[in-house]
Length: 254
Image (cartoon, rainbow, N blue to C red; front, side, top):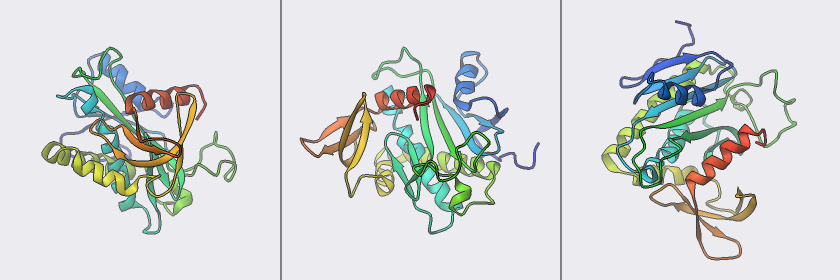
């Protein structure tokens, strides 16, 4: 065991992968091969970032299971809030962006069986978490991308991969227990405290178009309730937004 290997709480079992692999992709492959099930956590040994994927086996329809995405964001807020200096502001951009002092530092993502419809109970759901700890050799020069940051530039120079992954897994499990006992309302309320766009209009990119407005909250499926500048309130679908964000990342667009 490496000195910077994370320690996981009971009910979660860690499975490391090398730094050239993607935790989400490795988790999905492992599920297909019968290697992983509920409570397994695939985590990356990549030093410049904290990256993991948690395998779940929902007992509810996919539409409700996707509540795990805002839950994962709330866990990231508590995690970074505990590890970062007090002056660091942690906020969320919908559907899965993690922001520190207004710049993106990471994201939450999700994957589920392609054949699962919104009313189906999916065989599995994988929730991913990734946060940049420091710049790596492939990053642009600091300052070239003002909309992005790393924790080392935000007062977290000594924070390690193992500390971040271990802390996040504990906060995720805590919120999962809250969700199981009390439902989605506590998750929604905690998400709203850190949500970007509560007090001023933001621009959302969805379906190849821009929608500008102010967030009113989330519905029971984790969809964003948005009040556009020029029309009535509308709902932006979480599942579609997650797939679009993943496609952009896969194609190198963001």
